[in-house]
Length: 169
Image (cartoon, rainbow, N blue to C red; front, side, top):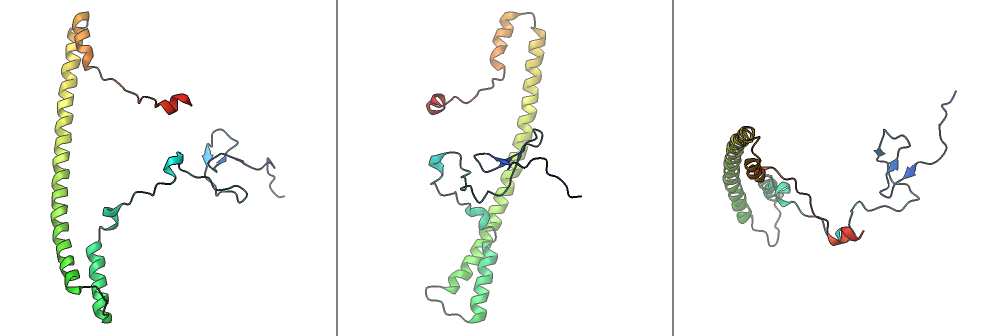
């Protein structure tokens, strides 16, 4: 016996091209766009659609010295004569890149160690601040004037204000 489908209706699609589950506990499921529907942009704002994506240069060039060395080795092995390419300069670039990479990595690891020490010290200072504030509040819990003065140390959750375009919508 072949399994029966509960519903013969096509799945409902949202404006983002996702199929909405008929069961509440499943939520949204990503499915490929329907061939009958035009593709929907995932960019939420119209003005951002035309802007080119940001380029991430540092991550792509992490191993540029290895790539450059392999290219120079290939050019030398094949005996290619490339117009406008100075192989001596490329070999100098390889050495400079490796030296600067070592210097950069040392500076970065030094910064990360400094940042970690700072974060730990700041956490300890905040713990002492919170303890002192809690003790002061408990000692003067019946004194409204002192509690009013201590009120300025209360953490305030600030929400972002609505822009005029959001208010009009």
